[in-house]
Every structure is written in structure tokens, then in C-alpha cells.
Length: 339
Image (cartoon, rainbow, N blue to C red):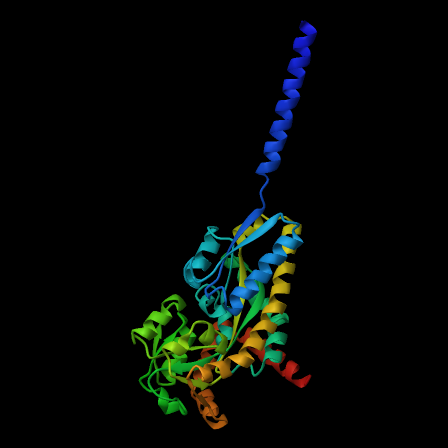
């Protein structure tokens, strides 16, 4: 009888131990990463986020899982940035322009007519200047992984064709919540109004603002052609996006987990730039087909705008620091000399 009881107790203990280990195994879930972005899932931003998510899962062997939340469902860029700093959200992608209030060096990328083409953009952003600006985020509670491409920004409005500088006079133009954008368009004669991107379509539809400025891809994916008649090809700013991680979250990751995020981000960057450029090359034609009236800004008018903004550029140089400004100009000269 005693032997039977001992055997029964041993079997019960083994069964309990097995059940506990099974329950423990079931409790080991992938590390979930909430990743916010502003545009629609069908946009270039949404497609690249999907590539990022796939590679995070693949490279981590399923131990890390990125949950993509688009359409500004987690709030505008500025709100998500604060959530990352506080550790309430893990990752996001957003405009560098909305980071200027946090890291002043980010204003470098807002410089009107700084970058002439995508070759210059890639070399500058992926080189020592891009790294230096990115590194400044860490002291503010953010980690920058890679730059994606938003693209060259162009003007749209519903009031009149803009073919020369004077045509901007009095146009109520939505700009990002960024001092450089505000000051630049005020200097050019527009009535610049700061608004979060998430409120833009409604503002255009209700005529609270007359126009806005964004790359072709965004104008198309956001269906601004439904509420905007005129488009002017200005290419006034090359605008990057940046993939960010909460430093609080980053500091809690292992070396291997950080490597997964860094590698997945680099893969997504290469995909995103190619995808964005292919889409942009078709988007202008599609916007014309949707009924938008397109005006190409002449070289002479571009020059007039650039000259008008000289003091804006001088202000950016002072704000980001003359050392960084001069290094940037030297790096651009080096990039251009390689042509």
C-alpha cells in the first residue's frame, strides 16, 4: 500500500511539473512592438511598414512581433514622439520636421532647396551628417534607426495656379507644426497655418485652409485631388521620414534584439525608397488624370524663392550650429564632386 502511494505521489508530481512547464512554454509570447505611422495602410509608408514587420518577425525567429498601427490612430507625429519618450509606445515612423522642437539639429532637413536630387539625399542621410543628426536624439529619449524617404515637397491649393512668387500672396496654406516651414511660407507671402496631418483633409474640404504642401505620393494616397485643383511643382524641400525607437524600450533590449531591429529597418529603408520613387514617377501623371492642373515652376522663379529665403537658411545655420551647417555644405560639395 505504501509503495502504491509513493508511486502515485511520484506520478502526480511528475504530471504537475510537466503541466507547469507546458503552461510556462505557452506563456512565452513574442515581444510585441507597437509601431505607429500617420498615413494609410495602402500608402508607401504602409507598404514599407509591412516589410519592416515581416523582417522583424523573420530575423528574430518569431520572438519579436511588430504590430503596425497606421492612419494616425495613435495620434499625430508629435503625440507619438512623446509616447516613445515616456515609454508608452515602442516604435514609430514620422517626419523629421516634427522633431525640431525636441532636437534642434533636425531642422537641417527643413532647409529649402538644400538637396537637389535623390542621389544627394541618400549620400547625405546615410553618411556621417545623417548619423550625427540621428545621434542627437538619444539624449532626448529617442533612438533613430534609419531615414525613409517622404520625398520632394510640392504645393497644391484650391484658389489659383501658382506660377510665380506673387501668386502665393494670401493663400491660406497648411504647413507642419514646425517653425522653419511657418517662417519660410510667411516669407514667401502665404498665410501659413500649422496643422497636424491628421486634420488636413477635413481642413481642405471645409476650406479652413486653401492649400498644403506634400510629395506627390502623399497627395495621391491621401486623395487631396478630391479637394485641391492646382498643383505647382516646386521641389522646395527634400523631406525624410525617420524610424524611431523609444530609448526606454531600446535600453531594455538585448544586443541581438537591437541587431534585429537595426537590420530589419535597413531592409525596409531600401524597399521604401525604391517603392516611393517608383510611385512618385507615376503619381504626377495620375494626379493630372484625376483632374489636377499642374504648373511647373520655372528655374527663374525657383531662384527668386531661394533668394527670398536666404535669411531663413541663415537662421537654420545658426539654430543647428555653424559647425554642423559647414560640415553639411562641405559634405554636399564632396557628394556633388563625385558626379
